[in-house]
Image (cartoon, rainbow, N blue to C red; front, side):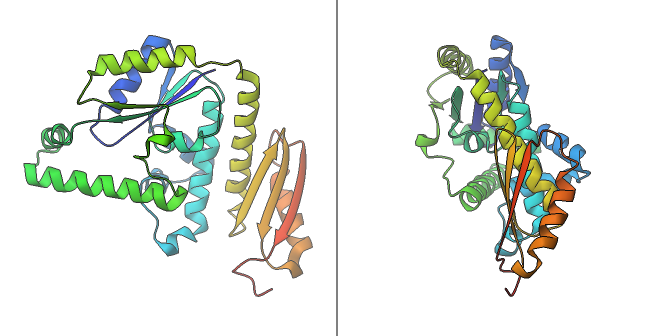
Length: 269
């Protein structure tokens, strides 16, 4: 069940390449529309989730449960979608979320900056100076988002299996390289990979649901067994655990729940 992630800057032909690779291999092609799926799951606004995914957080925003909830729900939908396998994904952070997963081909596509400027001018009816400034701002914002949330640099070649420069090769050549790599990279990890992705989806969904009530939550899932750390006052440990268990009782796929309470910066003790 190979998965291909395509990371790129704006106007770098990432969507076009993803679509052509998916057509060649018979895979599903998934992009920014996955944000809407996350919104539909928890009655979140599209704007709120999109902003959480694309804007680098300020210090105060990093502490906001609403932003963390948006990100957690996005991860839940992302991992659940990826667990179906045979996917080409060209949205945000795929190469980071799937960094340690087998049978994933992580691709970075870069395009000539002047070509990107011309495309920005054409689509947005901008002058060359305006388009150049906007692209530089977009690139910096995207890089800052990845760095602040995950401590990674999108341009670090170590994050990828393929790093393709479209100034040197054609789009069709890039498609052929990516498709060929995916066809030889499957190592029989299908069931293990699907199980792991479903566990990761369940962990993220657990965090999203509990963040409606608690300001800080971390969850890990192993084969359906959920381990949750909720930060709060240790004097309210029993109450916190009861409330968390009540919320999680509504969740499908949970075999067993383990809940711990850890001191929080929000609680005096």
